[in-house]
Length: 199
Length: 236
Image (cartoon, rainbow over all chains, first blue to last red; front, side):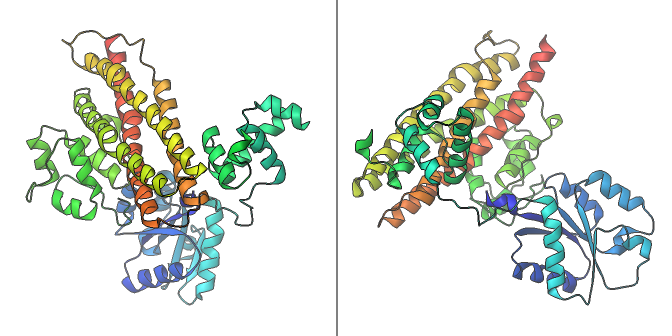
């Protein structure tokens, strides 16, 4: 599902210009995301219970001076990555709490690359180099399946182990998005792997 | 149906405004037996008029808005009756309206494209429709009467032995996965030269059906059945 690859980003940022600018940089990137703007930490924590965020971009002024807010974030939103956009002076110990810090002068690329690195910790994006087409072996197995053979019978016929047949079947279902035998038969006819006379 | 701007629904919001934002809530109101012309009434007011718990209504409505969050502590055993009525009404919608509608699109498409794969799609769907009907009948005739007898202290006794939560789950998984297969076949694999608008209408019906079915299962498996199990425990 493509939504597996979609980041949930929450932003706590009082400046409209910074918020809009940041959103625009992300919109022009190839990152898939939903963005939610929050008024303050309390709203973010409340929203998190309904929709878990992957990344929380929060202005350091909301972090207070000590570790208290940070501990609260880690307790309520354990999986979240913390990011800040810095455009004022903040103490180093505050900025050290973040997973990633952007400066107001950073070019767009720096922001995109930074977020993309964090993305790998949270969501799995499909590899488009992974072919959707069935391999010859998978096609052979599909033909036998549509003839009504069991895993064991297919294994014997093709001189492979039942375990290998099961693993091929999983790959066939993953590539086609179809599990049931009747669905696979329709697929096989559509792709001319079998013709109706075959069975 | 699918919305990107989602409002998290709260008791003081006006129903009509929510309908403008997400028209699939019309269907939800129908499942609740509530007419959608409610003037400027809020969620809380409409719930009071119809004797429906506000937290139950809000939980369901937010599912239609894309938030699948629920807290079992929000529900009382007495809410089960409203839930069962809601689920029964959705059964009628599936059986009388949505599945026949999908079937009709497939038949129209088959009429114009009398190919082997379209004949098999028609057969696939007919068998699937039969499985769905069997499951809905099981719910109407075995599961719901048992639930009702459990929550209604003066009601007759229906044996629990026929009901199994795991059978329920298997049926649901199967129904959802076959619907997904049908979408995959029509969207990714079967190529037809023409009838694009017919295919779009068919797919659109499938997406609508899937959206409502998915919420239906969430309600049954994550709210109603746990609530029933709690009631069973309390009775023992």
